[in-house]
Amino acid sequence: MTYGRARAIFRGGLVLAALAALGACSKPAMTTAEGESATPGGTAPLRLAMVTDVGGLGDKSFNDSAYAGLQQAKARLGADVQVLQSKSAADYQPNLTVLADQDEDEIFAVGFLMSKDLDQVARTYPRRHFAIVDAVSSQPNVASMTFREQDGSFLAGALAAMVTKTKTIGFLGGVDIPLLRKFEAGFTAGAHQIDPSVKVLVKYVGSFEDVASGKELAGVMYDGGADIVFVAAGKSGLGAIDETRARPNVYAIGVDADQDALAPGKILTSMVKHVDVAVFKIAQEAHGLKTPAGNVEFGLRDGGVGLTDFKYTRAAIGSAHIARLATIRDAIVAGRIVPPATREALATFKPAKL
Image 1 (cartoon, rainbow, N blue to C red):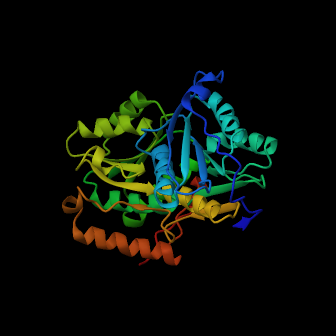
Image 2 (image 1 turned 120 degrees about the horizontal axis):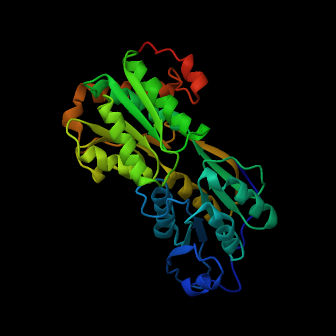
């Protein structure tokens, strides 16, 4: 990562946007969630702001994980934090613009869907600093945070292949785009690392916020013989988890955040994408008077992705499978296994001899 100019330490005044002021903007679709931190003395605290994707806070997934990173910055760095929630894609640019007009040190855009809008706002406000999750920006005042989702998904697929009784598992994605294909390819390859004969059903909801369709498509996969479904669909995935909860002898695998407690014993594990780690890292850089820029990729090696600790399913999985999974994880970290990130790479993937 490269760094630009230093942030000023002292400010002449602190400008806070209250909910009433934000409501006065002609953006009825915008809702807010704010938090403040008390900083002793006269030094202005680090100011961080975030625009959510359409899933919003409470998605138990991507947006909540990013918000957890902000809360960590509030607790550990004394930061003031502010969040604007997007109800539709039409809110991205207005929300980013509202924050750019304020005196924020770093503005986070949560999700690749904001990429074009963020680039435009970043060009309009070259003296403001931004960070985006899951997209790479060429703007000099934007830091990019990307992940090796295929690494963690490979582990999820391997675990699913070890546990399945039907030799059929499923992948349910939100939208069929290159980012989600990293999850799909890694998951399928991980399953085939364990057993090439395991069948992987693949379906996409077409949305990250259609809970009803997520539930329906998970049911279709279970009816088609799958007994484990990896759900990488944002808020749509909550519907799939609800369907899993209602059926015997099946499991879901959660995504992005630790979703295991949403249906204890019914979620085999979650492929956690530590967006909170990435957000906090950028916040630390800003707090250290550095301007984050460039792209940083987070994978297994640096704790950017990984599985949960099987709090509710350890007995069902068994110690032998967990030990085998640790061996596979070590092989990925060491480079002996390179999980595919595309369908084209998946087509040429060969299980490694460990």
